[in-house]
Image 1 (spheres, helix red, strand yellow):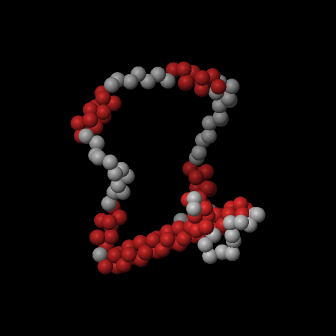
Image 2 (cartoon, rainbow, N blue to C red):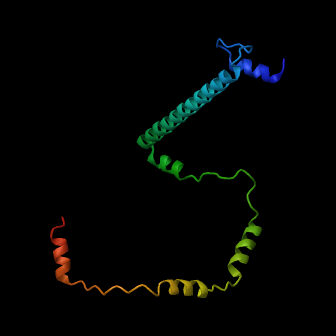
Image 3 (tube, rainbow, N blue to C red):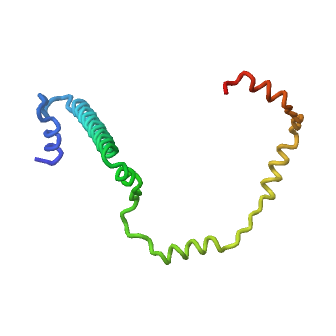
Length: 142
């Protein structure tokens, strides 16, 4: 029996569908969608359980030993599983990066922005007096 037929039979196990029916492709798609939804539901259920369990354990640890809880929260998350980078290579990389002089020239960009803003009329100066401040904060709570 081919592997695909065996897999399809396993997918339809427990249902009243036979492989000789004429609309088997539609039923197969529906069954696959149903199984995908079940898998997604189980995944969400497991995630909710894990979150609840973590929350419960953290609350219990907070009640018993706060120092241990905060120490466990401060542990860095390991992002890479490969070998650690060589210290000499890392130092050489950053030394090379910081020791090279860089010539930053903002000339063309600032000239373009200045030419675009040339037609904008400047705003009239605003003078704020102590009376203006007193009037603004008079209705404010504390």
